[in-house]
Length: 127
Image (cartoon, rainbow, N blue to C red; front, side, top):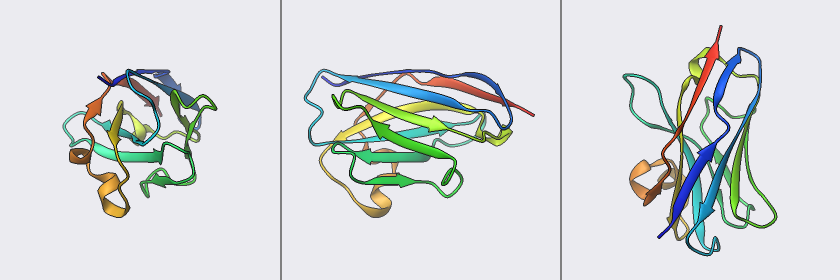
């Protein structure tokens, strides 16, 4: 059973940076697609970024492109989300997600495509 544990959330001022981590365990990382989603109060969960297990292909929502970077470590057991130039509208609970098997295009952004989810970590950006 895949387990995902996020860490790294917190309170930061607008313009600041945070790095979220998602520890992957329970299966071999090979073949998994990893994603970050976020949910603000009163809003639907939305796609933020995704990466394939080899790290060779990344995807971003338009709202974070150029500010956020998704990556994996060399051991391929942790997925990171480096968030720079944070804005108050980035405030949300950020969750890590995983699915086995490759997907492309719009499918990468659909939360229904992911089978495993972490518990989430709160990110709050003050103005």
